[in-house]
Amino acid sequence: MAKKLKLRQKDLLAIGYPKGKAIGIAINVAIKYCKKQTKEAVLAQLKAVVDAPEQFQADPIFGSITEELIEIAAEVNEEIALTPEPKTYQAYGLQHIEPGTLLQMDTAMRLPVTVKGALMPDAHQGYGLPIGGVLATNNAIIPYAVGMDIGCRMCLTVYDLPPSFLKKETRQLKEILQTNTKFGKSVFANPMDDAVLERQEFRDIKFLRPLQGKARRQIGSSGSGNHFVEFGVVEITEIDNEFNLPTGQYVGILSHSGSRGFGAYIARHYTQIAMNQCFLPKVAKHLAWLDLDSEAGMEYWLAMNLAGDYASACHAHIHHRLGKALGEQPIATIENHHNFAWKEHLPDGQEIIVHRKGATPAGKGVLGIIPGSMTAPAFIVRGKGVAMAINSASHGAGRKMSRTKAKKSTTYNELKKHLKQHQVELIGGGLDEAPFAYKDIHQVMASQQNLVDVLGQFYPKIVRMDR
Image (cartoon, rainbow, N blue to C red):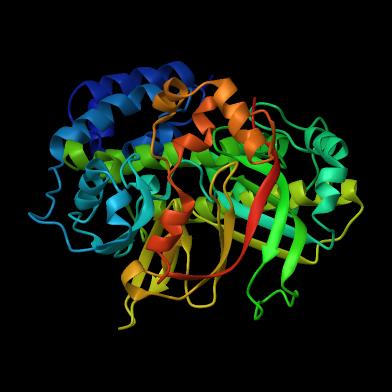
């Protein structure tokens, strides 16, 4: 007959449990769910819980212990002080940026781990770091400074077709978009396979294992909100371009989307871990960081990079499906991402972690795409590598209205009239994404002409969004 599991307070104190309610909860959980295991095995599991309670918050057995442990930790840990004054930073297009956004950036520049910062002309308020904010830190990764939609990106494919093709084949192209793209909760019944779904990280990081199925189901689809896939006219204006294309007009497909629910789960999970470990004043709580040499920090770094590669795979599937439906091969492809963190170096050689939350990498010679709105052009750019901007540029025009305000500020009739004036066909979309909700992309580009060279534009003509 197997011995009955017996646990005493001294057993749990010996493995690091604090005196109090947590010990009673842990003993009750162990006796109820682990009575067939050896005492040594049970204590090993309970030690793992007390060492990293945030890792077990969703665990069906040990999750009930974590709330008390985290609450105790919060009482024991002292709040991390911000520096009295923010470090100086460069703000581009200051006249287009609201005071609340500047206050958010000032808070980020008061973190003790902050090294440098910059604010792009499309900047507006977000959680933690403003959207359009660039923040360089010392050996620290801030999940909310990366953002919820990890690795969100732009992708443009260019085809050797005349712009007249768009007008001539509008009906067919609308059908191609509706058949070969999925948005929001809608996914493909038979999604394409991809090597990213078999990555080792899904096996090595416990938290990622149950997300593999969700990632498989959603691959090749796009998110809601401001995400889109569209046909349009590509105009190459720079003679000396990396695509070796003659100046002139072509047909292009432009997409904007990220890592779907997969990336969002990663962002929420590791943000909570950071907030449980890094106690900041309320005004800065969403800027909680993880040390990169900690277990959680290293896990997040691997998971973030996986989510970025997953987002890239989604775009590859989108453009593959549409190219196949067109029966054409692209003659050029450009892709860049934001909502990410990179390891880079200052001129003196110091390694920094550069967070670009809604900001485009613009190192010297780096190509990118900066979109406007569904009726305004996107700009194909080449970075100039400006140190004051931390090698960055805006990721778009930037919102000038919240989604709620945008819905109240216009009507569907006004939107339809505006679309007709610009000869744009819209499939889906809502008033919260109306062009009026965004800043003037031409003003934004004028504010960052020192950051990027313009190689050409993309003019939307047939736009597909959620709804």
